[in-house]
Length: 407
Ligand code: PLP
Image 1 (cartoon, helix red, strand yellow):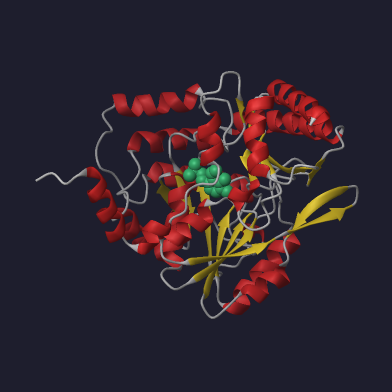
Image 2: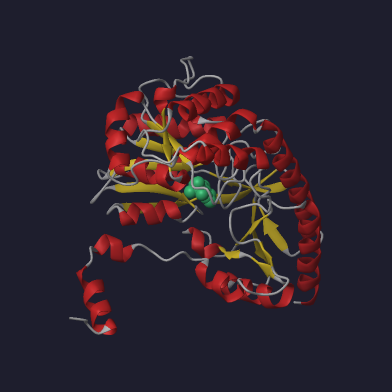
């Protein structure tokens, strides 16, 4: 028998698990829906660039499909990809631990994007009744994934402070320590940060690690933007500090470095002794990543350095154009983003950034994300993704500057 749609909907919603019902809606959806089909709008609200995945990566996926690699595969990832990740990590970070060791393939687990790696990390470390500390402003999926798993995110706002001739976000480790309770299991550290561009110093990471060791906490380290830094080759990493028995899980993704956001491939890095457990979690969630996508990822990791360099150069030029152009307006306050590819800025005279984001769609042809989407301390800001052609970012900057001059 068919149940009337409305009755069924109400009944179903009442009957689902509260943690599923509580999973929050993304805070940028409203602005996105408002402006998504606008002619001539430059969409800078999501965290991805304008370049498609390079041909050499796509070709690897096609070859795999043509070779008939269409069957179930290793839950942890194909050996070739895990070896490619280990080689890549060795090239970028040298060793996994401060006192050496080797990046062995057994540390790596192929996932459906960084999001799935995060989901696995949360499953491994915290659940119903547990707390996880998230310094904010933060990528909202941290809080969302925690809530959906029954845990509680505890937001600890970072501070925006003057440093030399510019503003800078800083992590207040004492404040984080104060937020630790009996129920705390995890510290989520995302550096370089989406949305602020904050890039932890080695000292900040060391202080977090010390706290985690002292209180027996896990660190979930999201270092996906570690290659997008502007003053050095890579961002400081927990790999520079940890020892083999430290409790750190690393979230990684193919999405940004290799322009593969739509592919949904990433990896979790974890102590090899967790291998069987992680394999089980993968088995019972996604049952693995399609082989042709893993082949493409392996090729990207092995041959992608030129492409990463190109993307970094574009982002650096875009960042420069943006910072110079907006600073000249005298209306913007922002920390200089040391890493990632976002500018998180406030506009003097426009404290309501939800309303401002909607106006900018209509009046400046620019799609930005309101800062309230990024948790405590985010509301006065807008997030702009500048991983695009520097000429386009220069044109957007001009449009924003003109709009500011008349508003
Ligand atoms: N971590 C951070 C900080 C991100 O900004 C993103 C995507 O925007 C991800 C993880 C996950 O990326 P994906 O699931 O696309 O691989």
